[in-house]
Every structure is written in structure tokens, then in C-alpha cells.
Length: 474
Ligand code: GLU
Image (cartoon, helix red, strand yellow):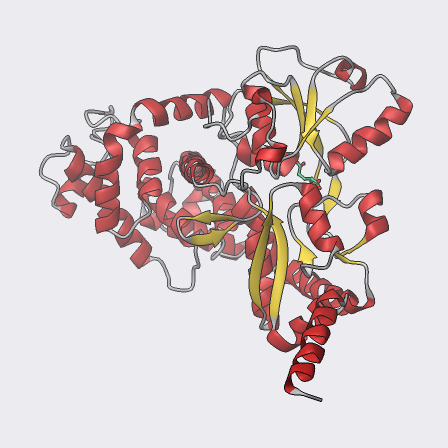
């Protein structure tokens, strides 16, 4: 054969290999690169600054690390696109908050479920609340095209043929929430876990009813023999992760943010982020950088402390943006507590000190929540709550376990047995819960501001009233 003939054979075999179905799985065995289709959304995969983040990302990272794989993501802009990537075996798996459905199961294989959530009907407060399935008839209801919810409505409409809905070609449900907020749709179907997180951005939206009981969420793989081995590896990993608490930890990190005590609180916070924060953000950012803290955390703490009022004072003698006591101010070298820079620096330094002081084997994010609890209640009292956790067979390294014990510091049957005695533990819990909520709202806002936008294809441009890439409106 001539060199040219050799070349043709080589090219032909490369092309054939490109068409071969188990090719991508052979690649996985040789290169160790796991290719994953996902959606860019606050509950799946996103960039926090330049760091990849999200529930699906963390779970995949843990699996990839356990098996020594590297990860590559393919972001799909619609669910149909995502499933096509899987169908054509351009990816090894799809990890995108996918609900297990009969139609999908007929085409693909699923792993064990790792999350449960129910599909909710949401509406804008002030509009008519639907209470039953029949109440949806005649209302403008939107769902993601190709979603489990579109499938579910299809099934429900066999019994209730008057049901109608619109399917929106988008990759994430923020688009649907945007439509309802802007009154470009009346109702939407959103998964409960996603809604809980994203409601922070749209505090006017409320859940009206569960459209279905809880459903399982899992990763999907091509339905081939070659993919079966990967599926088995994943299932072993998921079982171990469930048993070791790893999975619960990832769920808690992403979906554990306690709910706002009231929607009014969420709404007020969102409004103040627009009206008050811009004036303080540069100062907060500069102080946060000095103390190597995330500025959004410092913003959340200062909001919880003073609602960003540098002249705030309380009856108990704490003052300023970070509500520092006189004694603490002296310790931290703060000479004027009403000077916002000094107050923020004092508070930031205090948080840093607490983070350093906590035992080294407490990992993030538990470390941060405990430092904040200590900021509020005092280090000694936090230690007492950790001791109580240990005595009760809980884990003093985990925030949820320590959190559960803080209220006992004001239980008269229990606090006398602790080293530092009575403390307002209930308040400390609310304090940390609120800050987590504010922090996560600010994170979400920056994530959505930096969201990857789909490439614009003029041939399929949406009608004006469906233009979805609008700025977020509260
Ligand atoms: N869980 C949905 C699905 O599997 C996607 C998210 C949503 O539509 O809220 O299709």
C-alpha cells in the first residue's frame, strides 16, 4: 500500500471509530476522562467566580475522585438537547437534576436515585391561587420543554383533557420563574428542591400545590452494554456515599439552606440588595479581600447585624455596621465603632480569628457556620453545644448536629450541666440560618448574572414575548 492508501485506511477507520457506539466508553477506559452532559443552573452546575460548583458538580467530582477520573462537561441549553447528547453517545452520562420518568426509562438507563423532590405548581402572590388540578384548566401554565413535567402533564391530561400548557425551550427553570414574575405566564411547574433555592431570587413567587408525590432524581446513561459497567461503578459509589454520609453532606450543602423565616424577610433583603448594597459593596469587598473572606459572606453578616446601617445601635450596647461590643472593639483595636470601615474590619478580623481557633478537623462549610455561631453566642458556648452533641452520639464536627444542640443551652434541665451555662442558643441558630440565606441569595445573584447564555441562532429566534434572557427583576 502506498502512504496515501495507508492514510485513507487510517482516516476511514478513525471515521468509523467516530460512529461506533461503544467508542466513548472505550475512551473512558483509556483516557479516564468522564464526559457529562448537564444544565447550567444554580442547582446543577455553574461557575462561582472561576470555580465550577453546584450540586451535580460536587456529586460528580466526588465520584470522579473516587474512581480517578477527570471530568469534562457539555452544557446543554435545553433538556431535548441534553437527551440528544446522551442518545448519540456524545457523553457518558447526563447529570442535570433529571427526574426518573417512564419515557426516559424506555430510552436510557438510570443510576440509583440520589435525591427526591416533588413537582410544584407556582404562582405570583396576588394572583389567583390554584388549589386543585381542575383549577389549572384555562390558566397559562408553562413547563420546560422535554421535561419530566411536560411528560407528567401529558399523562394527567389523559384523565383531564381540558388541561393545557406551554412548553418553553430553555435549560433551567429560572426562565420559567422569570416569566411568571413578569406576568408573561400565570403558573409554572418547578421541582421543589430547585424552587426552594431559586425562590430567593423571586420572593414574590409562591408554591400553590404539589402536582405529584415525591419523585426520584438520578443520572441517566445510554442504554448499552458498554455503559452498564459505568452504571455499576456509579451505583456502588452512591451506595457507599449514602452509607458514609457523604451524599447527605452534599445535599445539605446545596439544599440545606434553611428557609427564610418569612417571605417578607426575603423580599426586604432582595430590595435592600438593590437599593442599599451598591453603596457599601466596594468597601465590603475591600475589607473582605484584606481578611481573605468572600465579600458576599461579609455582606450577609453585616446585613444580619445592622441591615447595612453604619449608625445602628442596640439597647445592649452593641454598635455600628457589625454591631460590635465595646469590649470586643478594644480587643480588636477598633477606636470608632460607628466608622463603617473600622467596624467591618473589626468584624472580619473577629470571624478570621474564630475560623483559626476552631479545631482543625472541622471542615468547610461546617467550619464557617460554627465560626458564625461563635461570633453570635461566644466561642465557649459554641464549644458547650459541641460537647452536648458528642454526649448525645451526634457528630461535633457537623454543623447540623451542633445546630440541633444550641437550643439546649437555654433549656433549664440541660444548661446547668454545661461549662459556660445559659446562652441564647435559639437566637444563634436563627442568626446563622439568616446569614446562610443572605449569603446564598447573594451567591445566586452573582451566579445568575454570570450565567452562560446559549449561542444565538437567528433561524430559531424566539418571539419577543418569549425572549428569556432578561435581567432578573424582583
Ligand atoms: N426535573 C426536571 C426533569 O427531569 C427538570 C427540572 C425542571 O423542569 O424543573 O425534566
